[in-house]
Amino acid sequence: MARRTPSTGVRRAAAALVLALAAPMLAAATGSSGPLGTAPAQAAPLHTLVNPTFDTGLAGWFESTAKGSLSGVAGRRGAGVRLTHTATSRYTVILNDTANTVTRTVAGGSYTATAWVRATTSTPVSLRLQEWSGGVKRAEVASTVTVGTTWTLIGVNHVATRAGSGLDLNLLAPALPARAAVDVDDVTFRSRTPSWVDDFDSETLDSRSWTALNASTFGDGNLELACLTSRPQNLTVADGALALTARREPDRVSCGSGDDRFPGGREYSSAFVQTKGKRAFTYGRFAVRAQLPTAPGVSRGMWPAFWMRPVDGGLGELDIMEAIGSGSDSSDGADSADGAASVESTRVHQSLHYDYLPTQPVQKVTATLPGGALPSGGLHTYAVEWDAGQIQWFIDGRLTQTRTTASTPWLAAAFSRPMYLRLNLAVGGRWPGTPDATTRFPATYLIDQVSVHTPAT
Image 1 (cartoon, rainbow, N blue to C red):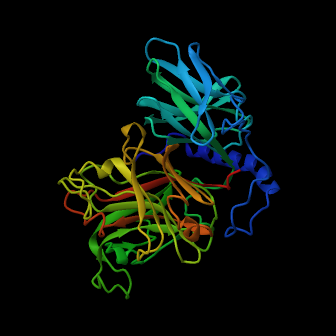
Image 2: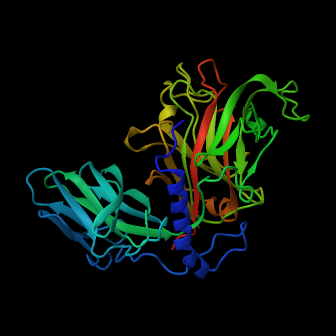
Image 3: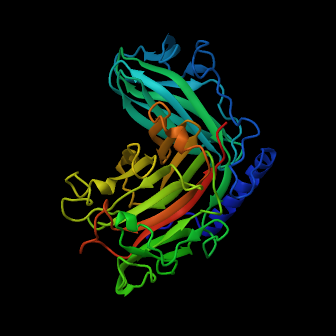
């Protein structure tokens, strides 16, 4: 299984630098009541976004190409701006912030921009954040969406590679047809500092933050098949990563005297870790960088997940990322109706649960990775930004889903109190189906990093 490219020593030094640089700002914040407290509020904004709603005209923004132009237009709500050009064929137009929205980044800080966009004809539009330091572009992330005449929300997230950089925010239409136009309105920007990062650079699981289930039948309600253990065969921390490994056991594994489903032992074993009782958070950015065991055609029955549950055990489940494997036949999982074994291998699922009755319908979307990448093909970042009245999901820095109190009236009732994190690799169950002869074991859910950033400013 592939590991990340930087050495463990480099990653450990980088993590130490991130937290050291963030510490003064965190110390200046209101603070928390220990690991189980709500993440601290920001002491002061980390960015300055001028005229984000364009209600004061074009102040704070300019069009940076030779043939492009910027003008006022009726927006989504109030005023907006329009990008056009005078070229006789397709031409790139760019909307820029006049002064960098962020002038000095915090190392490891999280920065998120969104904008509402529409076009007079169907065309791709990119929202982009560029990190600059010493006149050199250190990093760039862009989210590209094809938009039409309906207002569409586009969003991008970037985690700063170093302290003291500037962030340039711009929106571009890379091939806008002649006489076409792109309208922009209601730009937002959020900045957050890292409050907890686990790079798994020790040789054991950090027991101050995580608990590993052992001889557990958790998941029986979903008809899952594995005995969850903390054995090194199922759970290891090595080479700067946490590995949760599912196995088909040569001899059945006893899962305790209370295992009524499989009193003779279980054919499968796997692992499950959580921060319950040790770390909990109310609002912020929560991310995992991981490689999933969902390779096409050889992973039927696999079900990796990164999710959150409330400390009080009541309403609400926030699924930041779930995925299921696929077999060699035409069925992905027991409940799948996609008709192609390759479909599930290309995507992940993001959802909200009010409760498990369900009193309210589950709100779920499926999302693919940028550039057609496979979740099993390498490390990718799956994140959620949870704020009062709004939850947004991201994959590799690109916005994939937004839920607000308008789309989800029960959002505040279910998602307004401390929640803890869970990472697990389930085997079998109603959704992914039972592993078959094509399923490759052992199968490893490789977690390179888990990070939490403090609430938005």
